[in-house]
Length: 110
Image (cartoon, rainbow, N blue to C red; front, side, top):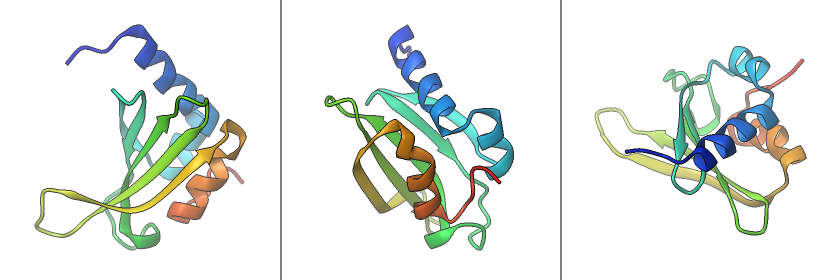
């Protein structure tokens, strides 16, 4: 699947607003993907004790009104599908780190 430069730019912008390399180092996030919504999807370490509600995947979607919807997913052992455990809409860019911390329990900065 090929994405336009717009989708990649949105995904890179979201990662930067989350904290960029500092965010990656603090959370262990990996497998970053630009999604069609447009937005960014990434996975967190799979240890179920690591995050609130065993969150192991996060999506940040850009809404038409220039805010974000942040979704948190968990995965049950032995299952292939992800289950949405949390969603917050109307998130402004300066709120992304705090919303991520509230959903996952992971700090994005010291």
